[in-house]
Amino acid sequence: MASERKFVTENLKRVLLKEYIRKHTERAGFGGLDIQRTPMGTRITLIAERPGMIIGRKGATIKILTDDIEEKFDVDNPKIEVDEEKNPNLNPMIMAQKLASALERGWLFRRAGHATVRRIMEAGARGCQVIISGKLTGERHRTEKFRRGHIKYCGEPARIWMAEGFAVAKKKAGVIGVKVQIMVPDAKMPDEITVKDSLEEEKEVEEEVQEEEAVVEEEKKEEEEEVKEDASDKAGGVQEDDSSGKEGEAEGT
Image (cartoon, rainbow, N blue to C red; front, side):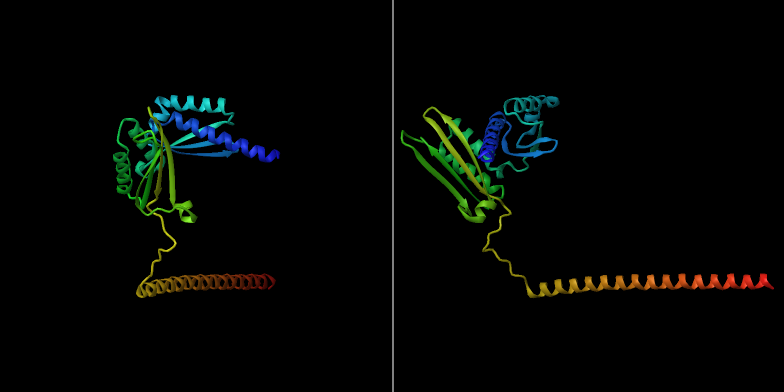
């Protein structure tokens, strides 16, 4: 039970740490977090849309954040690394936060949902789904979904190729939950099979055979050179022995 409690405590600490960092980096476009324990301490890799806002002038902001994490969460020697998100429109965390911010500013949920889906698909995603739930138009709770492209809900393709992000929009009527699911552009489905042309296969086989033959010829040449070197070394040794024998006979006479 002690080990199980330790696992629960560590995971709870990770969740609280992630929520704390997310809360303090929302303005910079929080895009994800990775925590790794190393012999030198704890390495925290933070993905953001605007890393400069997290680092601050001369690293002042990130130093304050590091000290707070070490003090509040009892993290051993934390080291924070900030990476820039190259394509924010394909990051579900960033898009969920932008959608929640748009709802808080007064955008209609349909307009905001369709605009988010359009931006994601134009960025090159294979598919996306946006779910908005809460008090959207009246006192009753509603759930609206906006879909486009390929979407997987379960199985290995969903686990590997579907990225998910969540955010909350706080309005006067109540909170609105926003979930964004994106299928990455390089996703490959199990039923997608590429059939190669027979001519292309023959060319590939010929190229492989030629490469193998070239390797074999190089090995043969190296072996022949080694044999020649050994023979020349032996011949040189025999000549030295003959010359030494002749010199000995001359001295005897």
